[in-house]
Length: 321
DNA sequence: AAGATGGACAACCGCCTTTTA
DNA sequence: ATAAAAGGCGGTTGTCCATCT
Image 1 (cartoon, rainbow, N blue to C red):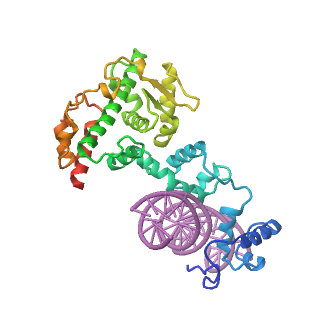
Image 2: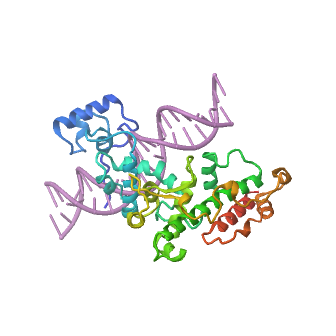
Image 3: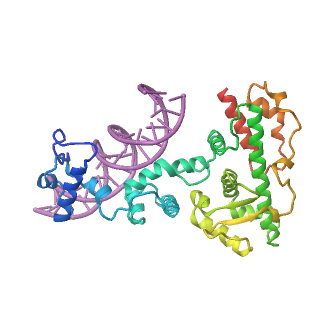
């Protein structure tokens, strides 16, 4: 069945609404109520398509619309609802008072989606991406001054090794911390099966990318919600309370690594690094060569895939050069 | 200073579902 | 029961504006 157009599109005005048009539409709807959109433009004296009037009203002029920046709570809720409902923006909007589906959709596409991608989380599946986007990770790290102004491939590799080692160190400590408080958990595998190692990795990376990163590993509920189902967060939170791990007011778990046995170096400086002069490698042609010189492939006890990360980085670099 | 670029958001388009006569 | 109108929805485009080069 061919549908007749709701108006003569060649004669109606398109594009941004003027304040005068807004006033006319608002005044008309306040008097006559919304609805009968096809007839509305003619009756109100607007040279607009009825559909355009409806959208303008529902997405912008409606008095119950809440404008302004999305709060952290709203963002968390959107991410959670999206993980359950997918791109059902109108359904998501029903759970956020005063927000329109269009507004939420725009916010998702311009903010949240990018944020998740930068964290290595697939915004469609809400799971950690298997094809870790290292260039993005490096971009984020650069933005946060982790690898600022580094053009030398050797230095890039070294800094990334720092990031990887820090993450590995933190992960080890978190696991040891949890294990030490639960006699039933006698090995890393057991704990990993409860928490899910990918979740830990993601939490660690996001923690490491925080500018105020210190000697503690914070799994904020925000970071968790951005990547995982709420049930997942619940798992971790209940684990935390069972084991007396402090919980932040926002539901975050704070693992203070200083309480864990010092089985790994406590600071990047103390970590085993090749004692070489950077200048000696300044003429290396690419990152692959640099990583080879650094012997990065020889990361001992790499149960958590950091070697893969470095390998991928190396491959990315080779492809680019 | 000016053009290029990219981010943010409003608005539109086309299809689908629901309602109405 | 059926067709047309109305409304709803999600994807995409257009426009504005700030920042960069």
